Image 1 (spheres, helix red, strand yellow):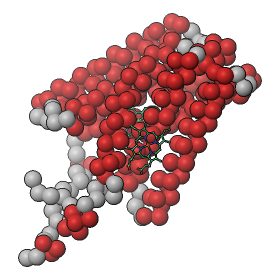
Image 2 (spheres, each protein chain N blue to C red; image 1 turned 90 degrees about the vertical axis):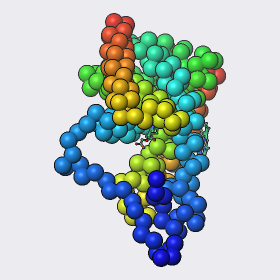
Image 3 (cartoon, rainbow over the protein chains, first blue to last red; image 1 turned 90 degrees about the horizontal axis):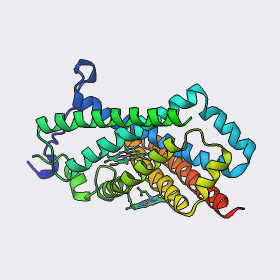
Length: 132
Length: 127
Ligand code: HEM
Ligand code: HEM
């Protein structure tokens, strides 16, 4: 068979409906979800400085959302997304460098990421709420 | 391990995103740069809880913060832009839609990035 006609063997995607969620797959999709959330967050951060440059009235309008219950949840949620994506991103960079591919290691680093992001989020919520 | 690319793709030498390897490196470099920046910004955000207009402006306008804030926003938007491109490529089918969405997403990133730079400089240099 000529090279051009050789069949291409591509991997099949897992069928999500019949897949039991596993730590590794949940963490993987969370990296994508938090990456998207952080991208919106980067736009929000830009909006913050734009309002701060505009006028005190504009800024207090922006702040009235931030200090509302919904705003607090959004900012607190941003912190979780940041800590999760940050620590799991470092996990990704280790993989890229060729470390931690054994299944056992992938689970161990996965649980470390879960613990670090939850602890960092909780700590920053406590400190943030005390400063209010 | 078998090569996952078709013979044509192999001959073209492109990655999955046509410009795969370059894109891959830019994503990693910006990720490494963001590690200290995101930690710094998250701590600052917590410390600024309850800050009013004057405190916020004084913080944004101090020289070191101006530099770090511009870096955080631009490198963050850039890394996000590279990442969202991959997300769009994965989920949107049809070349027209794919291209239109990626271009629109990039425009938004560039516009917000530039507007933020102007805003930060204005606060710092009092325009
Ligand atoms: C305000 C800041 C920046 C803006 C607006 C910006 C914008 C862009 C745009 C629109 C592209 C084309 C994307 C593509 O072809 O895939 C690009 C490519 C690239 N940028 Fe930036 N960039 C910025 C900062 C940076 C920084 C800080 C780095 C270094 C880490 C960097 C490294 C690269 C590389 C390596 C590419 C080629 C990627 C590729 O071809 O896929 N850029 N940039
Ligand atoms: C403003 C902050 C950030 C934003 C907006 C952001 C956004 C994103 C997005 C949208 C993706 C694509 C997700 C996907 O393809 O599934 C991504 C991937 C990635 N991010 Fe971030 N990110 C940020 C900070 C960081 C930090 C601090 C790290 C530090 C290590 C990091 C490491 C990575 C890595 C390694 C990937 C590639 C993952 C892969 O290959 O699937 N990111 N990011």
